[in-house]
Length: 408
Image (cartoon, rainbow, N blue to C red; front, side, top):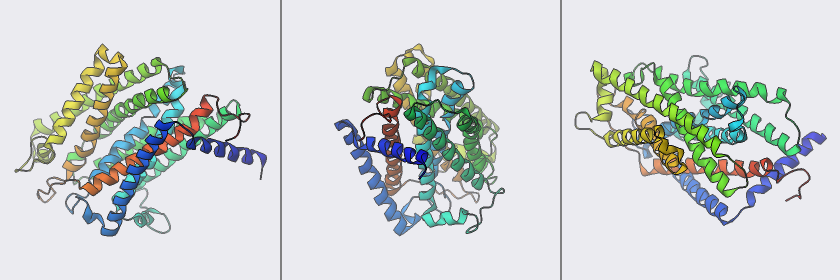
């Protein structure tokens, strides 16, 4: 075995050994996540046996909670670019120390996206239909095939960039630009493309007029650049409390600025969309009426969307006020924005497009307990993955794990 490859395997083994070390808080956190992930796996096994009939989906509403989460998480993954752009394009070093942490989040979140697509298929073997040679990939005609390509390439790009840079820190060598700079710039373009292509997936379905809007893609990007950096603000504060890795307040304030501007754009685009829907008052406004006010006695999504509107507006007010320079209020604004966008972009965007159906049928969708458990399980698994990635990486970044340090 070549020496370089052997050294790399030693590096991976030593990093992996870090995941079984920690204080009681770490083990409680990991146990809780594992427990929820196993509950989700159990729920998925029930769905595997019974099929999608165990969900609240129907012939009329064929996308539900799984695709809502998928759409939200694609944006979270794309948000890593908001850390990369200032560092690599504008040469601003404020976020330099947290770029890798953002890219690790992107890797974990893309895996969660793929899991949500898997559970939405009902049976995992249906993935075979998308494997060229076994099934029919329908590329380039199918927008879904484009989505599969861009998501997998984005996953590979971020995994390579993180793995290479962390290994160079471990070896105390200066990274060779040829081995990561081209991949960083490709990942920047790819981050925009993954969420744009996901938006095109909806916009391209002409039979669903609720999605047939040119600003869906910009809305996706604006909401992604709000929720993603918002989640990172919360995560980075936890990291600096439980580890020796130093993260300056200046980096958090820069992320605050990104969240602030993105949230303003997100709300502006939402107002534009509402004006287009309700001012024209055409027959195509039925889905929006169902979402905001109910239609023909059906009000299933009305509490959801007004909750999202309230959370978004409170978060916006907090973010634009100097009050949010205080981390306590910034955290509150981030939590409200994340939850508000999760509802607005998930249940508030995906489900109404199916109600009423193209034939005018009013069939509402209500997620079942089994769906909620599967979603909770995937979220727990994703957070568990991210925790493992951080546990392997932070000792290297802080200099605690080096080739000279004692082996585990």
